[in-house]
Picture 1 (cartoon, rainbow, N blue to C red):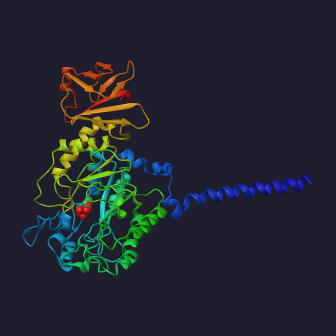
Picture 2: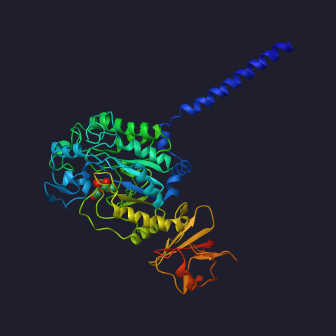
Length: 475
Ligand code: JFZ
């Protein structure tokens, strides 16, 4: 009897250990798929966890690149000033076959993905979003769906996302893809709307076929081949695209990759350039997308302001209206203080180079970040005040009692932060300057910091000075 029990026990043990082993391996190979209901009813905790890296990152590079870099804003010798560079096909009313010539000629032999990633890293950026396909319908990878892509159609004949993915992984920076729902090249989408591809007056009755047989398989390819951290949809305003399409797309993506972050332009709730969703509606999408503007204030819905350095997204040979680096640094700080992310754009040339003027600005931002990035990464907005007047912004280290007061005027004499109280006997520091500063606090004026004359020689004398305070928020 004893023997039987022992035998039974050992069989049980062996079976158990096998069961454990096989569940271990299955965990590594097959991911549990979320149901549509689970996805649409995600808890706040699960959402916060999924959004964590993105919220902490604060600063990303947007890349608009495609065949539009070939004309670079000039068609048949004429400057097309009515639209941004990547809109030239619509702006100059170029027929599909004629635009295809630009796609054929696209031959970015100087493209060096490693270099691009290094430029982004040096600027202090934590993620990159590149146009895998813009409104012109041209795909930057070797898509199996159709042949209108960089491998099968263009002179360059290679997959341009492959290299970027490799470089991004190597340098530990996240990669995400912009994908345009609107497609001016596809016969089942907006191509037949020529001469005005972007119109609310016409609909293509074959549009669902485009969604099913072209767009969806392309997006699936992107996820399967490159595991993007973010999908950034656009062109959702066409009348053919519906909330039902959006829910299908969003849930499909989260089923393929539960960690995926998807912008609000996947759905139809975005309100114009301000980019946040309509009040009261139920929309899918994880963050709002203010475009060429920064929210006036804070928001409970996550958001990312995307902006250009000049006045175009896709490269234009004659757009010289560059914002100064000081302005870009101000924007980054202003966005962070209001709890958002800053997605700053470059438009590489047809040769594959990021314009030198853009590189210089990114490098200036990197110099500033080298000293001051702790006031940006992993910060959150304060409870009550994100700013004081025009020239002060505040941020706070996530889950810590460390506060940053950032000022945009050269500090001299005494600096006042009305909303912060340092802990008794704590040091108040100016980032980039070694010695603690003398300070004083009283209920009426808040914190006063004495600025020594020698800080003029500190290495951080640039555009925005960051004071670091351990303490609490008052008022
Ligand atoms: C869109 C794109 O059309 C543009 O090319 C670029 O990619 C940008 C980031 O996103 O821009 C828009 C989107 C919406 C409007 C205008 C431009 N709008 O609603 O007026």
